[in-house]
Length: 375
Image 1: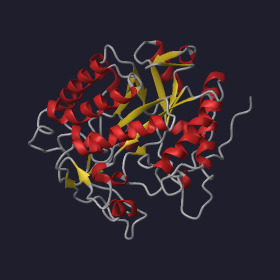
Image 2: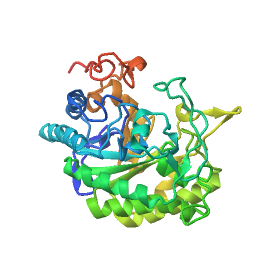
Image 3: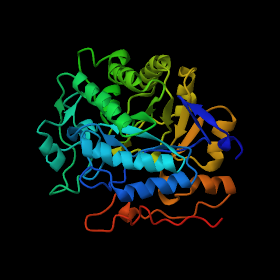
Image 4: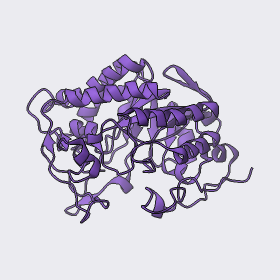
């Protein structure tokens, strides 16, 4: 595993290794405000050998809420809560990016935070995603038809303000959540974006929303802005025909490559995240890293999703990726980086009962109670 444990420069920061921790929604806030048990969670993983930590997805506005206890960064109490976490991470010798997020059409109008926001569930077009189950809403409803946002610049401004707030909160950079069927991905995909204005239609128009967000974030963060993308789709009812997918993401990445970003994180196809509708799988399976890396000659690529340590080493050693990131493996192995370095088995089972927390249950369960290996 020699390649994984060499330093790498992403943006303005040199990280001690090439093992990143991907963003993972864990749903443990106190009314959207980060708290002490979240600090413990992040500190465990800094000490466990993560090079770059990307925070769980942080909502840019109350309107974009899907999860009842996901964190936000639109008000001062949230900024202050995150500052305690970033200070702790820095004191422990780590670095942490904020992943900023808006859920778009996969919010629900009856969710408490959405009601409090006092605005509709916005999306690029009035097209419902299939599936969904809001267990915290009476009757556990699925997704509903959203309202087409009249001017997407409203959301772009929210992303920029979130990036400004992330700087105040002490983060080391920002990563836009452009994957997994949330609002950025909804603009990119022609099945969810059927606008006829400058924000829809051609690959160039559908890419405009994210390109404008990234330009705004570079104004705030310079080289320490990044984005995560999942071109193979599937999750949250995403996916276009293969050639349209390549045309769209190829154009997008060519434009993003001009911006001097810290990195682009490319999510591999995942069967686990590929739902079935009407007897057919939803995604467009293809080799995401090899297909899209050529469009990024000047931008570091981080590969994510379902990697084994051996695969991760191969991506870095072969030069196919500057770094890798692990998601699920960091949930049940807080010391994942140390385990990989020292050849320890990844033998903790995930407690799926408490993956996203549970009302009336100790939030530590399935969160900060996983055992480290013996060293």
